[in-house]
Length: 174
Image 1 (cartoon, one colour):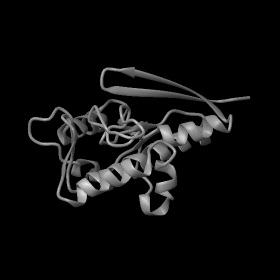
Image 2 (tube, rainbow, N blue to C red):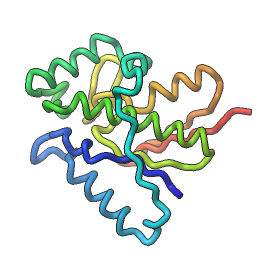
Image 3 (cartoon, rainbow, N blue to C red):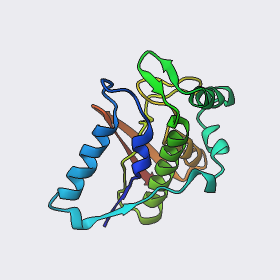
């Protein structure tokens, strides 16, 4: 079985009607997976709720406290932009935390089973820097967990960016 980590809550990150990173993109992928010939080999999983994790310590592996607070404040103020193409809506902060949690679940699944896992989440998280969001990304969804594990020499990380998809090959070190 291929674990696919997904939640309809990811659709609550609103980017505007004409923004290319929008909920419909995720819905199209989920629909295609559910209709695929291999659909019976997919195990749909909900991400761990962020409240069950120490999210601030996880986020601080990749981002400054000041930046994390900025994203939260923009969302609490009703939304706005981190830069010209990175919107934050009312629910974006909470949804971004859920996306980070989903990535943590995906990495943990790979490390536990030595088999692939697919995280179907938004907002995306491969462009965010430590002190700023960009390229539609609020937080670096994978960097926190991966950098922590890399520092402990538990794995080798090889990121590969192709179009709008990021693949992270995770291998245990012997």
